Amino acid sequence: MASTSVDLGHDEGRDGRDEGPADFCASLEAAVARNAAGLDARIQRDAIVRLRASPGLLALLSEGRWAEPGERSASTDVIQRALRVPDMFCLIAQPGVNRAQTVLEIVRSAAKRGERILITAPTAAALDTVVSRLPHGPTVIRTDRDGHLATVAARLQRRILERSESSSKNLGAWLGEPSPAKGRLRRLNLTLDEARRARKQCVTVRTPFTELAAQRALESAERSAHQLARMLTGVVPVPHWTADLRGLEAFAGHCGDLEPTLRARAGLIREWRQRAARPSRQLHAELLRYADIVVTTCLGAGRPEHADLDFDLLVVEDAGRVTTAEALVPLVRARRAVLAGTAARGSVLDHVLAHAPEANRAHLP
Image 1 (spheres, one colour):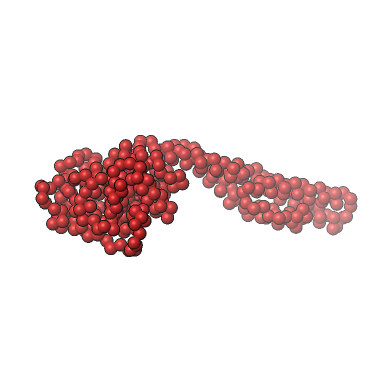
Image 2 (cartoon, rainbow, N blue to C red):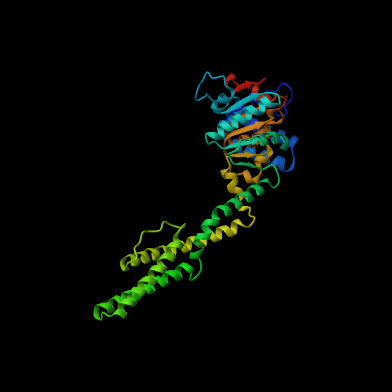
């Protein structure tokens, strides 16, 4: 990602292009000291620290070095050009439908090809229009609104409970010590033992009574096997089995091998559902990590919950009202950026445009 010299509150006539990287960072720090305090100042100073560790971006900001486009194209389509530039694209347009639709199409196209996107603006109000028009499908997390992340987490927890309800119900027979399934398996093995003893008696003393005992033991084993098969339905594929002694023994052995695994799985899903039923902040970090689109203010991008997040594309809406130090907070988190707005004096967009190649800028009517 790239940028060029910017207004840092210098005396009129001084140009950031004359500064080296160290002087540029010092100027940024001085501007922050003059214009911000408290948490906002700390967030911007942290961004300057990250800038020092990003030699490519630092060179671009302090010396105006723009990256060579990796893919040259004669296309005049603004959206395609914005998606192709390897560093920064400037979209100069007045607020309105044209700018909003163009920004949203850039976001939609980037999300469609699997990129993670950070959308920022100087204020939460400036983000409202963008958020209200974002396409359905991508997972969108807004962190500039209190409670939004908790609302999304609660919604996800409800979906987890809904989708796991059937599995939990099916696995319920394998819970407990002994579980209903284990009790039924024990009954199956006992009746198979009776059937085997009755068969041996039939070999030595064949009478109607011994034959009847063997038949009744086998029928009892078959009933237990049918009940176990129902307990397996919806949990694992039910193996084919036959109602003779050999077939029932093989089925009992298969169920015995599965029992510890299914008991552990049933306990795990029960614990998982119990956690999902309680409000928890543990999901917040994972939601942010895997969200397709994260929306926040420029300074909000420097808050602790964003500490380990990086993005493929940054979109700064209303960039004409964002200072360089403010813009730096999200800039250091993205590989490339789109700045959209009108070039007001003193804004990052104004000074980026001063040296931006034609390929990296576009004007909308």
